[in-house]
Amino acid sequence: MTVCIAAACRDGEYFVSATDGALSQGGETMDMALTKMYWFANAQTSWQFMYAGEPSNADLVLENVRRALLRDKKALTREKIQHTVRQAFKQRFADWIADYVLAPYNMSMEDFKRQGQSIFGAGFAATLAQQMDNAATSFREELMVIGWGKSPISAMIYGMNQSGSWSGSLVGLGTIGAGRDVAMSSLLLYGANRHSPLEDAIYAVAAAKFSAERCDGVGQHTTICVSRKPHPTDSQVTKSSEFCTPEEVGTLRNLWEAHGKLRVPEEGYLTITKMAQRVSGSVGVASIARIVQGLSKQSATRLDSTD
Image 1 (tube, one colour):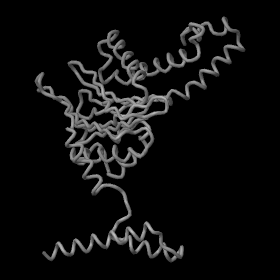
Image 2 (tube, rainbow, N blue to C red):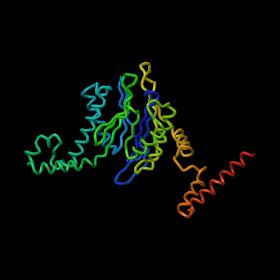
Image 3 (cartoon, rainbow, N blue to C red):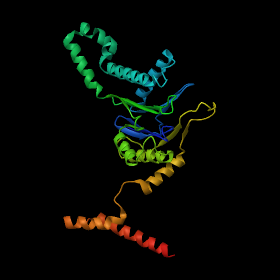
Image 4 (cartoon, helix red, strand yellow):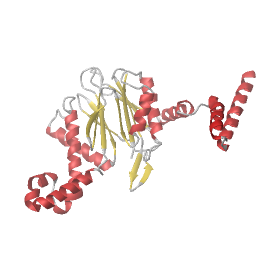
C-alpha cells in the first residue's frame, strides 16, 4: 500500500517526514514518484497531511476538510483540527460504504439511518447493515496529520483509520501504511523521540523508510521533508518546510546500506559458522563463499595498512 513516517525532534520544534511514491491498483504496484504530502495553511498555522490508500479517497477526505473550513474559519486551529480531521475522515468512510452497498437504492447513509427499516423492513434492513459492516473491512485508508499550534510544546501527530483515531504526539512518532510496523520498529531501534537532534531524526526517518521497503506495496522512491514550527517573525517568503534533494536522499541511502542495515557481522561470521557446523554437521556453500569473501576483505585491508 505505502508507508508514511513522521518524527518530531529538537523538543518539538521540527518534524521530519517521509513517504514512498508507490501507487497500487488492481493488485499491481507501480513506483510513480508520487509525493503523498499535502498542506493546509492559513495565517495562523500550517498542517501537513499524509495518506496511505487510494489517492481518490484521500482527495475526498481533504475535500471534506475544505468544506469544513468554508463553514468554520477556525476549523484548522490547534483546538479544532483533530475534530475537523476526524469528521472529514468519518464522512468519507460512511459515504464510501453507502456507495458500495446502497448505490442501487439511491440512498445515502443518513437516508438509511432515518428510513431504512420503514422502506425495506427490519429483516432486509438488517441484511443491508450487515453488508455494510462487511464492506467496512475493505476500507483501508489511513490519514496522518502533523503540525503545530501556538504554544511551544504544541507539536501534534494525529491519525485516522478504520479503527478510529490515534495520537503520536507524546512520543513524537507516527507511521501509517503497509510498512508502518517495520518503520516504527526502526524508529524505536534508532532511539528517535521528540527530543532527538534534527540530524539524528533525519537519518532515523530515512532508515525507517528504507527498512519499510521490504513490505509489499512500499516503493523505493523516497520523499523526505523537514518542517519547522513557524515563527511570528517569519516573512511571507520564509519557508517553514524544505525537501531533501534527490542527491541528499541518495546519500542517506548509501550511508544506510553501508552502515545502517541490521546484519550478521562479517567479523564474527567464521565463529558463528563453527557453531552452526557443530550443531548441524555441515557447512553450506553460501556460508563458505561468505567466509572466503570476508577473509579476502581482511587481507586487502591489511595490505592497504602496510602501504
